[in-house]
Structure formats: structure tokens, C-alpha cells
Amino acid sequence: MKCGPILLAATVVLTGCKHRSFPDVPSGYREFAYVSNGASNTVSVLDLVYLRQDRILRVGHQPTGISVNPQTNEVYIVNTGDGTVSVLNAEKNEIVSTIGVHSKPFSIAVDTNGRFGYVANSGANNVSVIDLAKRREIAVVGTGEQPGLARVAPDMRTLAVTNRSSGSVSLYDLDPKSAEAARPDHKDEEPIKAPHLRASFNGCPGVTDAVILPDSSKLFAACSGGHQVLSIGLASAPGSWAAKQDAGTLTDRLLARLDVGKTPINIALKPDGGEIFVSNFDSDSITEISTTTNEVGGTYMIGPKPVFGVVSADNTTLWVSNFGADSVSLYSIDDGKRTGSVHTGPAPDALAFSADEHLLLAANTGTGDAAVLRTQDRDGNPGLFTMLPTGNQPNAIAVKAFKQK
Image: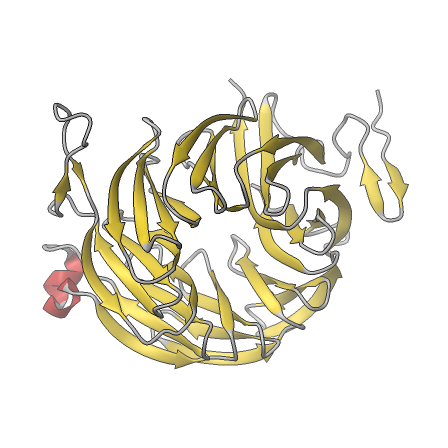
């Protein structure tokens, strides 16, 4: 049977087979995008092989943050309204468990081994540590006021938490030498190491976003209540090469306060870790920063109300969603300039690439759908391919690809 796409008002509906101009995939390959819909209390499952909505799943109240497990085919959805985390089995695309946490959880970070999840509870001023396999909270640590995001360093030695109301970044030690917290209901099991507060850095009003470099050496935090980004050096491991070269790296330290545009709300990191790109919401610009020298390379106009950015795997292109322009802009990193834009839908926010980056998804908060962009057509140009329905107020996207067993 031949594929029969029907084009209606620039929207492509696929009739049960993959579009002929898309990359071939091996037998059993599955790839889905999961979109949390804050005003619908649902998660939309979008099939990225056949480009269609697969199903809609009911979760908790007001879902926000979403994250995938790098080692298993599970997805975790944070439900801000009822203080829970929904566990989604990606192979069956069904909710298999619900884990209670604390008041107004906002985000979840999963460690590299896929063993623990760290949930920032913005209404309780703490972080829940979840044993993902046993599906339960095993420890709680206090934070600053209104924690928003949790980030785990790639080396799994540091947990970073942004505290929006107190304008601070808290750093916790995840090293085995940190304080121990035994499981309260399983005294005979091996004790779990609870995060131990190592350092806190103030003076970052309205901190919204943070990224950690691939080598776990630095953290950059966006101070959305002002016009700065903090560069923080993360403590190196005792006996490591960095520590032997400079004993000062054994402690966390503030390296720089970098002036950017007004209301920096998102940081996009190049996969090679060499640069970050800050979306300045009230300046309609992005700021380029060298992570090696902690210097601002320049600030460039990008589009009205930029809110979210992602960098391609080859480190050449930055994609930025313009909340105020119903578009996504492209910025050439090598050329240092904006090179074009693609129409999405009303008020695009979160972005996510497909696994091989032939697609870019943008959550249109104004219409409750996701714009599916082709990053390159046959002529090498980007463009809008289709719209897929989600739910009301789509606010986060996560992609999971795997081969069906």
C-alpha cells in the first residue's frame, strides 16, 4: 500500500504509514513525544514515527515538569496541583504508578543511572528523593524559598536547585561520603545517601533556569528578576586532575556575574559545552556566553519574547521559540547571526528535537497543539510540516525512543 498524505491548510494527516521523505527506521522502532497539558490534567502521547496523536492519558492535577529515564522506558510527570508524580510506561503508553511527594512540585531530574529522581517541591521548600524502581520517596532535604528546577550533574556528585523566591541556587553533595538517611520502613536494607547541602549562592533574583556543563565543572543560572547570569564553579572530586592542578576547585565558588538582556528566562547549552545561549524575554534577544572564559560574546536580536532555546547536536544551530511572534527563529552559531524563522502557532514555548533531529516540536500554548517542524526539507530548508493536537496549556515536552521488545 502506498502512503497517502492529505494536505489540509498546511496540515498533513498521515494515513497509517510513514511519510516517504522521512528517514527509514528499523523494525520495532518506537519514538514518542510526551506533552504535559497543565489545564487539561493530561499528557498527550504523540507518535513521531507515524506523526499522529497516539493517545491522551489522564494524570494528576496541573501537570508541569516531565522527564525521561535514560536507562529504562519510563517517563515521569510532575503534577503541581496534587503533589504527585505519575509514572508512565513508554512501551505500553499507560500510567503504571503514582508517587506522592509534597506541596506544588514543579520539576523532576533523573540521575544518569536512572536510579533516583529529584523533585523540586515549590510549595514546601524542599526536594523529594525518589527511588524510581521502588516508586517511593526515600528522603527529603530543605531548600530555599520556592524551588523550581532540580539539576543533577553528569558525574552525579552534585544536585543543584534553583530557588525562585529567595533568588538563590542551592548545591547538594551526592557523593557517597554525604550524610546517610536510612529508609524509614526498611531498616534492614542498605542505607540510602541523602543529599547534603554543600553551598548556597544568593543574589540571583527570580532565578528560573540552570544548566550544568557536560564535564560537571560549572553551573550557569539565569536571574530572570534582573539581567544577569551567574557562573558557579562546582567543587571537583578530591584526588581528581582538576583538584591536583588547583586546590581551590575543591570548593564551590562564584566565578562571575554576567550582564545579559532583560528578563533572562532560559539557557540553551551547546552539546560540546563550549557556549551557552540565554533567551532574554523582555529584550527580544539572545546572549552568547563562552563557558570557558565566562565572557559575554555578544547579544543579538532574535524575535519578540524569546522563551526557550535548543542547540543542534552538531553545535551549529540554535533554535529559539518566540512567544510573542508565533514563530521559531534560527541562529547560526558559526556565523553569529539570525538566519531565518519558521511559523508555528500562537505563543510557542517548550521545544524538543526528535531523536535524530529531523523534527523539532514546539508547544503552542495559545491553541493547545504542537507544531511539528522539519529541520531540513529536500532543499535543506526548515519548515512547518504539521500540527498535532495536545491539550489545554501544553507546557513541557519530552521525547523517548526505543526498540520494541
